[in-house]
Image (cartoon, rainbow, N blue to C red; front, side, top):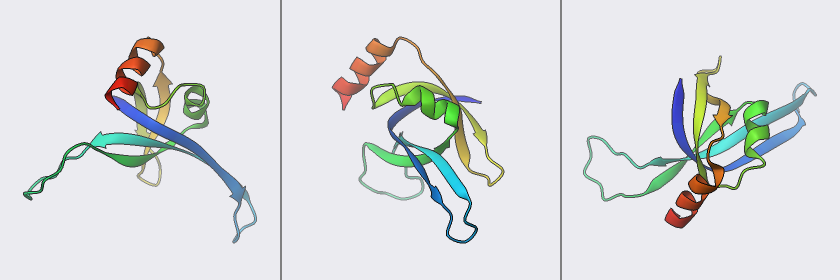
Length: 104
């Protein structure tokens, strides 16, 4: 499935698990999503950060891009039922980056 996301930041957390002693590496992205509140009257506007898992491939593509920026992303559900960005489509980089940066 593909979806367009405004990605504001990424990080790689790596280390050694205390319990097992195994090495781990987790790739994560902060995606800005519009604030939507259903069923309640609340004064709200703007975006909220939502954390998504990333594949190593998606992280490698994003690490060289100026952020925040909008991307067309391929997403999948992980075995632990979390959403994961599996790939990023890089298109007209400068136009998209300028549009997002001027809006922020």
